[in-house]
Image 1 (cartoon, helix red, strand yellow):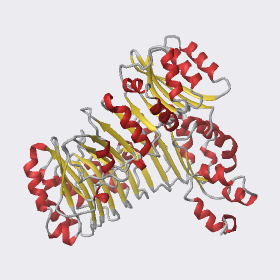
Image 2 (cartoon, one colour):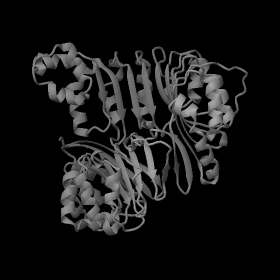
Image 3 (cartoon, rainbow, N blue to C red):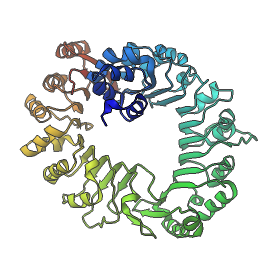
Image 4 (cartoon, helix red, strand yellow):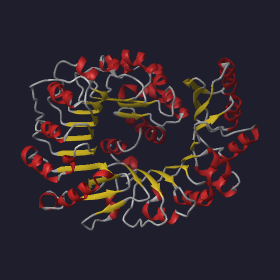
Length: 562
C-alpha cells in the first residue's frame, strides 16, 4: 500500500517514530494534505546535537507556523553554545500554550533571566527536566508551575523543599543528590502520589533532620538508587515505607558488608517488599573484602534467588574491586581491565549478559582469555594499551564494532596505531567521532590511506590535551585542514589565536569548535577577525576564563547544511 493511501489516523501514528526534522524535511513539500497534517498534530521537538544551519533554518522557516502545536521541547547548550538563549530570543515560550514537556540540559547562568520570566507562563507543563552542573536550581524551582506537573528531574531537593509546601500531583521524580532524611521525613509528605523515584546519590546531610513522622509511599512502584552513603539498616528502615514496591534497582559501592549478605536481603524482601518482582543490583566493594564477597556470592545461589524469583547473579573480580551483580549487567558503562574475571554458576548466553553496556573501556592483556565477554551494543569505545601489542582480533571477538559511533584512543600506544585504526574504521560503519592524543595524530599524517579514511568518516574530533598545543606553524595547520576537511565539530588547544582564524577559513564545514588557549590580550581585535571570517554567516561566540592564563573559546557556526 502506498503511504498517501493511509488514513490520517495511521499516518499520525507513524510520524511518532520520526523526529521533527525528518518529518518536515521529508513530508512538508509532498502535497497539501501532508503539509496540513504535520502542521496540525502534536510536535515533539528535540534540538539536541543539531547543526547550527539546520537550527536557524527550522526556527526561521517552520517554527512560526507550528509553535502552537509543540507539546514537547528539548533544548541543550552542549556542543551548541548559546542554543537555549538563541531559541528563547527567537520565540518566547508564552506563545506555546500547549507545551506539556520541557527539558533543558547544560543550562547556563545567562539563561536564567529569560527562563524565569517564561516558566510561570507554562501552566500546562506536565514534565520538566533540568540537567546542569553550572547553576543552582533554586531560581528555577521558585517559579516552576506545579499545577499539572507530574514528572520532575532536578539536581537537589533543598530548593524544592523550601518552595513547595503543599502536596503535589508529581508521580515521577529524578534527583541527582539528596539525603535520606529529606526523602523519609519531607519528600514523601509533599509527593504522596509518587510512583517512580530515581536518585543518583543518597548522602548524609550536614544538618540532620529529626522527625518521628514516617510517611508511607503507597503508590511507589519503581525505585532506582545509585550511591547510598548510609548503613544497610537505614536502607531497611526506608524500604519499610514503600510497601507496594514492585521494581528495585540498586548500584552501590558498599560501605557496610550487610549489603552483600543475601540473608539480609532475603529477610528484607520477605518482611517488607511483598510485591517486589524485579530486583536488579550491582554491589561493589574493595579487594580487601575479597573472601567475604566470594563467600556471599556462593550464598546467592540458593532456592530463594534462583528458583523462587529467578534472580541470577555473577561475580566480577579484578585487582582493585569485587562486584556481585544480577544478570544482565545493569550499568551502561563497563571497564574491562587486564585482569577482570567473570565467574558464574549457570550457562547463560554471553550475548545477553552485557547487552545494556553502551560505553566500554578496553584495557588489553595479550595473555587474557576474553571468551567469557561479549558487548553487542557498545556505542562509545575507549581503548587503553600499555604495551605495543596486537589486540584487534581480541577486540573484534568481544565487541560488535558495527554499532560504534565514538572511539577514544587518547591513551593508545603510538607504535602500532596506524594499522589497527584503519581496520577499526573499516569495521565500524557508524563511527564518526574520535578522541586522540595530538602527538599521535601528527604521526598519523604520514599514512595516506588512513588520512583518506579519516577524511571520509570523521565528523567530530577531540584532540584537546592539557598543556600541549598541536600546531607549531601554519604548515601543520594546513595539513590538518586537508586531512579533516569534512570535520563538523572540533575540540583542541592552540598557542596563538591567529591559528584559529586560519583554521576557521579552511574548514568550510565546521559547525562547532571549542578551543583552549592562552588568554587573548586584545579581545576586540580577535572578535573583529572572527567577524571578518563569518561576515556572511550567522554565528554565536563565547569566551570563558578558566584559569589565570587559560581561556576557552566556543563558536557555533551557521554556514553549512548537509
